[in-house]
Image (cartoon, rainbow, N blue to C red; front, side):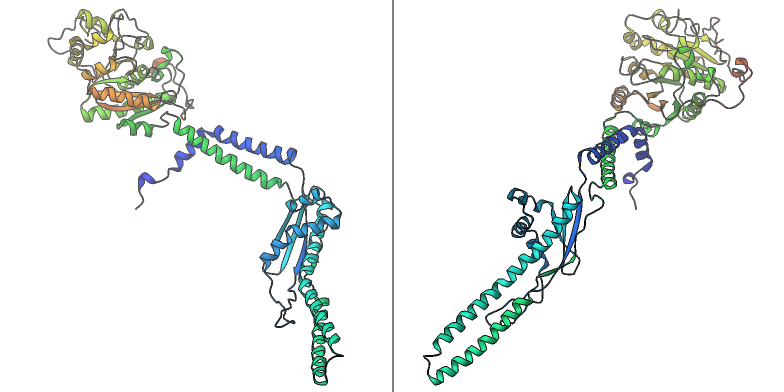
Length: 529
C-alpha cells in the first residue's frame, strides 16, 4: 500500500509555484537574456565543412609471405591518426601556413567514424566558410598521403633489400662453379619474381579514397540559437524552481487552514478573507456587509463554534492571537454578532486592559467596565451595555489600571466571570491582549473553558504560534480551535444579490430568547434584566 504521508501533493506544489512565480520567472528570463546576449552579441558565427574518406586495407609484406595483405582496419586507431600532429604538419605545409597557425589547426578539427563502415568524417570549423571547406579537404588528403607513406615504407624497404641481395648474387656469378652457378641462377630467378611482386604491390597501395569533398557551407553551424535558448531556459527554470522551494522553506508563514489545523491539533472554525476594516467601526463585517464574503465566513465559524460548544459544554471562551494584529477583537465582535443573530444570548468581555478595541467596534462609551468590576467590586450586570444587535451585550474594559496582569491574576477575575455565568448567557467571549505581547491571555486562560487562536495569515510566522501554544499549554489552557484570518487567497467578493432595503432590515432581530434573571441575582436594573 502507498504511504499517505509520502504521497506528493501536487496541489501544494502548484500553490508554491503560484505564490513564488516571480522567483521562477526572473531567473528564467535572466538566463534567457544572458543566452541571447551570448548568441547574438558575443559569439561569432562559425561554419563547419565536412569531407569523407573511405579507409582501405593496406599491403603489409612479411618475411614469411611477402604477398600477405591485411583485410581489416582498426578505425579507432585510424581516427586517432587522422587527428594527429604528423597529419596536421602535412596540412600546414600543403597550405603554406606558419607553425603558429599550424598549431591551432587541430583545435578546429573533429574526426568521427561514420557508423560501421570504414569511413572517416573530417569536420573543420571556422568563422570563414570558404576556409572551413578548404581545410577539411586538406586534412582528408593529408591523412591519405600520410597513410600511403606509412604503408609504402615496408614495401620500399623490402624492394631495397631484395635488390641488394640480387646484386650480391649477380656479382658472385662469374666466380662460381658450374653446379654453384645453377643454384645462383635459380635463386636470382626467384628473387626477381618476388621483386616484381613487391613493385606491383607498391603500385597498388591505396590507403584511402575521398568519397565526399567538403564544399563551402551556406549557413553557420553555431551558435545554435534555438538549442542554446532552450537549454538556457531549462537551466533558468530549474534554478527558479529551486529558489522558489528554498524561499518557501525559509518562509515561516502558515499558508493555509490545513497547516494551521495541523499545528494547533484542533479544528479551524473558519477561513476569513481580508475585508475593508481600516477603522474599528468597519471591522464589524457581519453588520456593515451582511452579505459579503467575510460575513459568510464568520457565520460558518459561528456554526462550528456552536457545534463545539454543544459537544464539549463550552460557554466561556477566550479569543486570542499569538501576536498583535491577529484580528482577535474583530473575531470576538463578529462571532458575537452571528451567535446573537442565531438566537443565543451572548456577552462579550473586553479583557484587554491595555489596548481595548471592542468599545470602538460597537461605538460604546468606556467610562466603566471590566476594570471597575475587578478593582471596585461593581456589579458585572450593571456594567453590561446593550448593542444594536439584540441578545448581544458588551462589557467594555473600563479605565486602564496601573498593573493589568496583577489585576487579572487576582481572585476578582474569577469572581467576575462566575457572576457573568450565573446570569445564564449561552456564550461569554473574551477579548484579550496577544499571548506573546503580555501575560494577560495566559493568566485568563485559567478561568475560561476554551481558547480560540486567531491567526493573521499574511503577517504571522510559525514560530510565534509554537511559542504561544507552549505558554498556553503550560498554563493548562484548552485550545478548542483556530480562525485563519486575512486569507490572501480569498479576496472579498462583492455580493451580486439585490441589497437589502436598509440597515434596519439587515439587523432585523431574531426571536428574543433572553431568560429572566435568576432569583436573588443583583440585577439592579442593568440591561440584562
